[in-house]
Length: 253
Image (cartoon, rainbow, N blue to C red; front, side, top):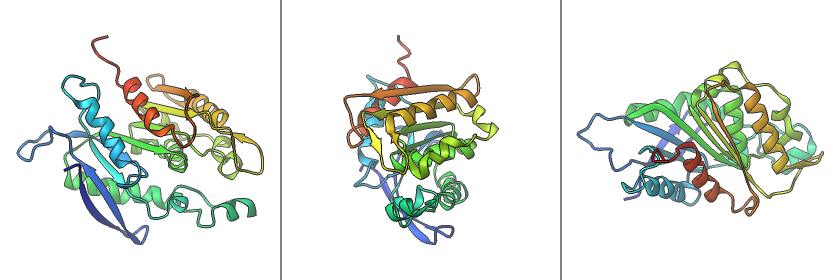
């Protein structure tokens, strides 16, 4: 069986949320070992859960053994346009995503409900990764910027930093970003994004990575990865594969 499906009722979001949870081969019922936990946005079975689990499983094969065996928590969506965005600042953005504005509630859900739920039910270590792409990458960028201690590692792919005319790029992060262990930012050849002012996805992602370098600690590993052969629709899987390889290099080399 690929994973376990559970339902968590969120009082913060006022709805039930479906969780898809993968336990690695070394996770045994009669053991006391703890494992890193990967929190996957867009984690539905018909979203990114299956191919993400596959990449971790592949890299966990004994003859590869590149990535720590990890618990993967996929958070299925109900309204990703609501959960991953702040309120549209003007009529253009309000028309573009009418339900936008739930990012702060969703972050509270992550920190106050989901993480405690996982900690109570599974043997998770303090090593926590957040993965997000597109609007989910925007949310992951926001968590890194303002709530960095929630996770040790961030894998951010094609973040929609154009939202609200690039509002996140105009802010400064909290000081705790210096404690983050690893940040991977990837983007394909994606071009112009929607907005009142021109925003090129590749440029915004590069600016964001530079800002992370500016504010992160000296021990934070930061990787910016440009995949020109991919576009917004195709970059997710190859970028995650590269992220796992770059963040967890082969110890034999």
